[in-house]
Image (cartoon, rainbow over all chains, first blue to last red; front, side):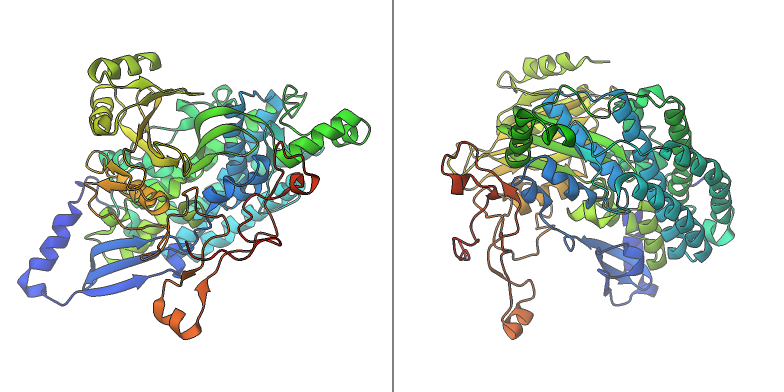
Length: 412
Length: 209
C-alpha cells in the first residue's frame, strides 16, 4: 500500500496523455448517464476520452430540476416543508429540521429543549440512514455487493422507526415552523436506543467488509485525491471536505439545535482520496450513534413546540375545536401563512451530504419573497471536472461514489 | 479572532462607499458593484473569509430600481463567522456582475446557476452557460415576471419537438399551491387559491412572452 503520494496534477497528466506520440489516438466522447447506475440519479457526465483516460469531464445537470425556489416564493412557509423532503431525499428529516431552523431564525423564535433534542435525534438517524445508503451504493459501484444487503437491512429498521414517528417512511415532513408535527410516540426513544445498541456491532461488520478489502482498497486509495485548498476553493462541505483534512463541521463550528451539549468527534481524512472519504463516513455513523445515545439519556420533558409562537405555530387541534379565537387564529395561519418579520437570514445545517443552506429574503407576510437553497451536492459536484481529468473511466465510478451526492438537492 | 462587528469597520475603512445592510443575523455589507471583487478579495485575504458559501441574486420586482442585487455569502473556517456582501446591478434590463471564479473555483457553478435562473451576466466568467435549464431555453425562470405555471417553450430536442409537435407546456395551477390574498375584501377573491393565476379556471393558458 502506498504510504505517501503527491497531489496529482491531473491536467498535466491529461495533457501528457494527449501529446505522447505513441498514444496518439482519436478522442472519443462518451455520455455517462443520465441513467447510469453509478451516477446515483440523473446526472450526465459528458466525457472526452483518450483511450481509457478521461481528458475532459463536463457534468450536465438539471434533469431533476423542479424549480423548488420558484415554488417556495408562491406558498406559505409551512406549506414548503414537504418540498424540503425532496431535496436530499435520502435524509428528509435532516432537511425538515434545517429549513425549520432557518425560518425560526427569521421569526426570532427559540424552540424548547425537547423539540431541539428530537430534531438532533432525527437528524442523526437521517445521517446514519443516508450514509448507510451511500456505503451500500458505493460498494455496488466498486464491485462489493454484500455491503448493500447488510446496510439496507439496517436502513429498513430505521425506516420502521421513522414511520412510527412521522407516519411516513420516506417523505417525512416532520418539522413545523416553531416545532414539530407531533411529539414522539410513547416508547419510541427506547426503540431508538435498542436500535443503536444492536446497530454498533453490525456497523463494525459492514465496515469490515470494505476497510481491509483488497479490491476496494485498490480502487479507492490514491484515487480522486482532493487537496485541502481545492476542497475549500470549490466549496466542498460535509465528509468530502473533512476527508481532505479540513476539520470543519457546522455542528461544532456554529452549534444549532443544542449540538454544543453533546460530546462527539469530527473524523478527518489525511490524504483526501476516495478511501479517506469512505473512512470519514464510517466514523461519522459511530459518532451519530454516540450523539443519539446522549440525547436520549438527557431527553428533556416539556413542550415540543414554541409557546410564544401563537401567530406562527398553528394551535393544538383540541383548542381549535373548542375556542372561537383559536379557530380564527388557525384559519389565518393556514390560509395566509405564519406572519414573518421583514429581513434577510441565512442558515445552514450540517446535513449528511454537507451544509444545506437556506437564504430567506422576507418582505413580511406569510410567503418568502426569495428563498435560495444551497444544496451541498451541487457544490460537491462542481469539483468533478477537475478531479476526473487524467483518471481512468473506472476511477470516475469510484470518485462519483465517494462524493456521495444526491441529485434532488443538486438540481432542486 | 476578529469580532463580527469589526469586519464591517475594516471593510469601510478601505471602501468608504460600503454601507451596513439591515440584517437579522450576521454582518451584511452593501457595496457598489464596481467594488465587489475588491471587497471580496479583501475579506478573503485580510479577514480570513476563506470559504465561499454561495453566490445568488434577488429580483426585487419588475418596477423596482435597482431591480437585481447579487448576494455573496462568505464563511471563515477559522473564526466561524459569516458575512453577506450585496451589490445592486447597475442596469435593470441587462444586469451585469463581475465574476469571482478566479478567487474561488466553486463560484463557477454558482454564477452559472444565477445566470441561468435570473439572467445576471457575470463578466470574466470562463464558461457562462446555463446549468439547470437546457441550452437554448429562452427565459430566466426565477425572475418575478416569469409565471409559476411556466411558459410554453419548444422541447430541448428540437427534432423530437418537430416530429411529435410536443412542447414544454405550462403546468395547470388549479391544484395549488393555495394562498389567501391578504387584505382582500371580496370573499371570492379572498378564498385561498394559487397565487399565480396565469392559467386556472378563470384565465387562459399563457402565451409566450
